Length: 322
Ligand code: ADP
Ligand code: MG
Image 1 (tube, protein in one colour):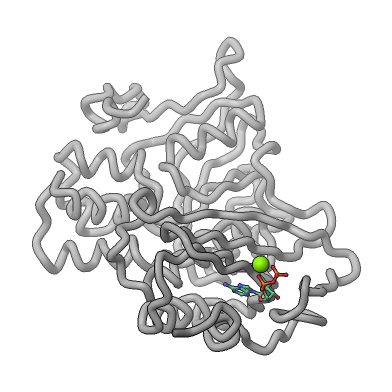
Image 2 (cartoon, rainbow, N blue to C red):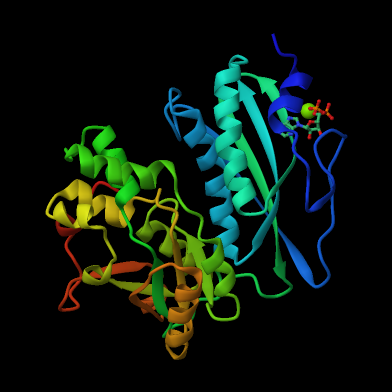
């Protein structure tokens, strides 16, 4: 049986490139570069709530880090360091090996050092803290959207939630379609390159973890504005488009969130610069609506059809969400 210390040494001790001191002491030592601010965020994944306990551990390792990287992307920060706190029901070397592989492969790809964590016995629970750097004053917050801004999203929306709906048997997809959608659910790509490219261009940003309408709603609330989304402009995959007449698919598009794409706002005068930032980052960006002054102080998100009329809840598949 592996001891806790052997476990940490075997699976979670890797040379730190960005840190003065990594795993193995009472604390890690890192240094933020001159002119940079430290961006810090944590996301916890709980078995049975955020993933199935029997989930593929390699994909889980990837996802646990990816959802945290996504928060860095949404701040325009460059991720540099992470800590990993694990509660494990048992010490299962095959599980740990695969989990660490998924986690570390993504960490290496983004130049992130795993600098510490905690390991304990308990119901399966994965908590990652991510730390990154952003030039002072340039972080993309939720609070600076302005009336007149365009609203943009990266990539395509809804596939991950569509895959989840298929797993829960709320919608039936063909096996090939389900597999394509499931890739987005299990291996979200954090939009780091886009987030950093949008510094000094975007006014506000958020990563879509709870669904487009809900997350854009956070920008509206924090900025004291309202938003109009044009349903027809939402970027969707061929698979999702094929099922758009189904409420579960429309709900995935507006209220699904597991794609971890970015939603951001920028002045109309910045359209070319946003397009170029997308090209530089290798990510499609789509303009989906605009920020408006809140009518009678009611910040919120309205989804409209081609003619600019608000969509009825039935048309959006959105009626099951409050
Ligand atoms: P302490 O007694 O100070 O809490 P631990 O024995 O929990 O120390 O951890 C020893 C070292 O291993 C520390 O540097 C800690 O940050 C690191 N560590 C523990 N668990 C993990 C993990 N799952 N991933 C990465 N580092 C870890
Ligand atoms: Mg400890």
